[in-house]
Structures are given as C-alpha cells and as structure tokens.
Length: 54
Image 1 (cartoon, rainbow, N blue to C red):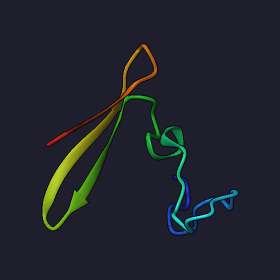
Image 2 (image 1 turned 45 degrees about the horizontal axis):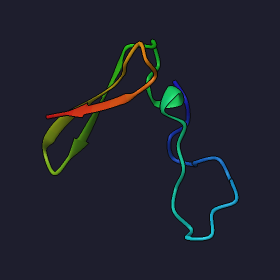
Image 3 (image 1 turned 90 degrees about the horizontal axis):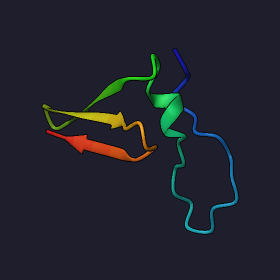
Image 4 (image 1 turned 135 degrees about the vertical axis):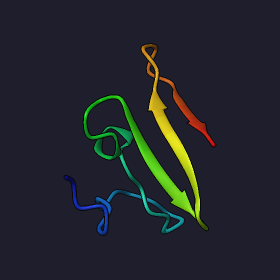
C-alpha cells in the first residue's frame, strides 16, 4: 500500500497536497475515502475520468 502520509513534492505555488489518483486506487478499481464518518468512493472510469460518490 502506498504511503499516503507524505504526498510527492511537486511544483505547487499554493502549498496544497498533491496525490496521483492511481496511487490512491491500489487495485485499479476504486478507493474509499472517509471524511467525518462518511465514506466516499473514488473510481477511475475507462475513459480516464474520476468519479467521487457518496
């Protein structure tokens, strides 16, 4: 599993954390993201688009 505690350093003038979606989606299908007890699902479509659903 990738180390999500340290995002890769990239040129980012706003000092915002940057993650590659493919690093979050381990098996190439989907990743669950939890915020305030709510679980969201992040998926990459066949067309290479991201979908975030609750």
